[in-house]
Amino acid sequence: MAKATDPIVIGKRTAKNRVTMAPTVKFIAGEDGRVTEDFVAHYAERAKHQCAFICVEATCVAKEARLAPSQLGLWEDGQIEGHRKLTDACHEYDTLVVPQLHYGGLGTHPACGPLVGPSKMVREAFGQKSEVKELSRRTSGASWGSLPLRRCGPGRRATTGCSSTPATATSSTTSPPG
Image: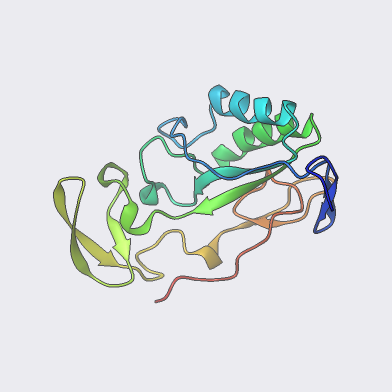
C-alpha cells in the first residue's frame, strides 16, 4: 500500500509525495485581482512544509465575474507576473502548482459587475434584487473557449488563460452556451 510520503506520477510530472492542497478562497488579492505578497507567502509556506501539489484557489477569468472585489484573477496579461512569482516560490520546494480557473456566474458580487447566467431572470442576493443577463458570447468577455493561449517559457506548454503554471495544466475547450 502506498504511503503519503511516496512519490506519485500525475500526467507527465512526478509529485515528491502525496500531500496535496485543495483550492481555497482567501480573498487577499488586490482590488485588481493581482497576486499580493501575502499570497506568495501563504503558498510558499505550504510548499516549504512538503505539500507536493497545490491547486491555487478560485482564479477568476473575468473581472466582472468575481465572488468579491478581492478575488484572485487572471483575466489580463498584467496579472501574469504575480502568478509567475507565486509559482516560482513553490517550485523552489519542488511543488507542482496549477490554478483553479473560475467564473462567478450567479455568485458574482454586485461590486464586480452585472450578473450573467444561462437565462435572463431576476435574482435576490446580497440584500438586493438584480437582473441576470443571459450569457452569450456577446455578453461574456470571458467565454472559456475564447481565453488566449500563451506560451510559458522553457519546459512549459501553451495553456489556456494562465501562463504561470507548469505543463500539468490543461486547456478547456468548452464554451458557454449562446
